[in-house]
Structure formats: C-alpha cells, structure tokens
Length: 356
Ligand SMILES: [Zn+2]
Image (cartoon, protein in one colour):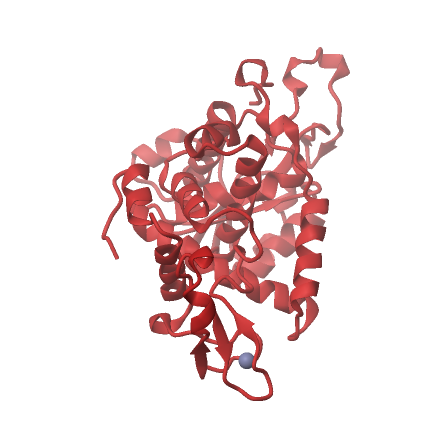
C-alpha cells in the first residue's frame, strides 16, 4: 500500500472504492490477506463469485467456509468493529486517520464537518475508534515507572470556597464533581491510564500490582494512598519539582505530569467536555497517541485498523466461542443502548464549561 498519506485528501483518493478498503482490512487482520473462517477458524475458503460480481456489492468479495461442518458465508468485516455498520469503510478510515494522526484529537463537531456526516454519526465513530485504541495498550510496564493521578471535569473551582463539594482522601481534597484518573508511565516507554471511583489505597494498589512486576522502581508524589507500595516495589516519593528534570535527575514524575497536561489541553482546547461515563475512552485516545508517538500517521492508521479484528476476540470472550450473527447484532444494539449519544459532547465551544 501507499507509504504515507499527507492529508485526508490523499487518504480518500487511495480508498476511493469500498473494494480497496476491504482488501486493506483483509491484509491487516488476516495473515497475507488470506481469509480465515471467523466461525470455525478454517483457512480452506471459497470466494462466492456470484455475489462478488453484483454491481451493488462494489466488487467486495464474499467468502464461504469449505469445512463441511461449517459452510458459513462471511465477509472480511465479519466480527470486526465494522460489521453490520451502515457507515462505509471509506468513512470509517477517514475518521480513524483524523482521530489518530492529529496531535490532539478531533471533536465530533470538527469530524462531522470534515466528513460531511451528522454530529451523532461522528460522535459514534470517535467512540468506537477509542475502543480500538484500548486493544493496543500494553498489559505490563517495567523498569522505572512514574505514577500520578489527576481529576477531570466538574466546575468546583468556580464555587465559593465554603460550598466546594467532596471530602478528602489521604489529605488530598476529592471534589465529588470531578472524576479521578491515574496514569502509570514507564520511563521512556508507554503509559497506562485508569478511571477510578476514588483514589483510596484499596483502589490504587491493585492497579499497580496488576500492571507493574514486583521489583520495579515506582516514583510517585507523597500522596498517602501510595503508602504501602514499598512492600512490593522500590518506592520513591518525590516532591513535584520541575528543576529535577532540567538537571538530568531521575527522581521525578515529570513524564506523567506532562502526559496529564497534554490531556488537559485537549480537554480545554478540543473536547470542552468529557462525560465521566466515557472518560476511559478519552484517556485511551490520549494514551494511544502517546504510546505510538514514534510512528508515522499511516503506521498508526494501519495499526488501529488491525485492532478492529481484536475487538472481535473480545466479543467472543464475553459469550464463549460460538456467536451467532443474531447474537452479535443484539450485542451491538445493547452497546448502543448502554452508550447513548451524549449531546453535551457536541456543545457549542463558546458555551462549553472550561475545566482545569
Ligand atoms: Zn468455518
């Protein structure tokens, strides 16, 4: 395929035909683009020529499994995030490219404008793509890891002091209209983010224990909820100090603090609002861009398309190995019901609440 797309126009030129989009997907999710039956795993597959030749199908191939106990028909989108979508792959690809290749993301307002789709469609596309980012996140970090939490949303700073809501955990105020998130960042490596119900040790410690191998070096500030982690790690507590970084010192949490400030600039400059329910998807998005910062726009684009197939594995995991098309359709409907369009995401930027 083409080595790089310098713009959305170039991408759209390359993926002019749905057929090209389907071929590209086949090469991302199947070894050498050779079809694999999504029902039984067989690689003995026929192309059902009659349907592929229909003009209404735009030359998009349909396959049939040659395993005589299976014989099911499928297309390359079967079981991927694109399955049963009324949106063309060309539009999906353009959205993936725009959300992934930009430095700061793209709001549903801007995306709708660029793709000539409704804001509702753009919002849906963006959130599904963020799910694919999650599939690319690492499970484990190691070496020197910086951890730091931050608080997202709410308007607490605008309230009069004595009306501020929320209690305190470990000596740190907990505004109850903000959602806490914690980030773990491997020095010169990748970041993992987690949306939290609160920042108590009961919540924070299992996250560390699940994602950092024993013996790692953990650097945090002196927040009390991190106390006790020295039983598992070389735990260093530092005071926030920007000068440590400048002088080449290693004992700082500047990496993760910088990650959160990029995130907050995106919040203020691009999104204006993130509902707590969808916050993990936005942190996925910023995490993905950070973790793949070394890659070109087109490499990131191809990687995300590849993950459209991994999302399929998760569906299978949820319901066991056999999944009927009816069941998958029901799950898609359920997903849509559980993730209703939040119109605040599309708020007029001029009237949007600005968070800190
Ligand atoms: Zn089969």
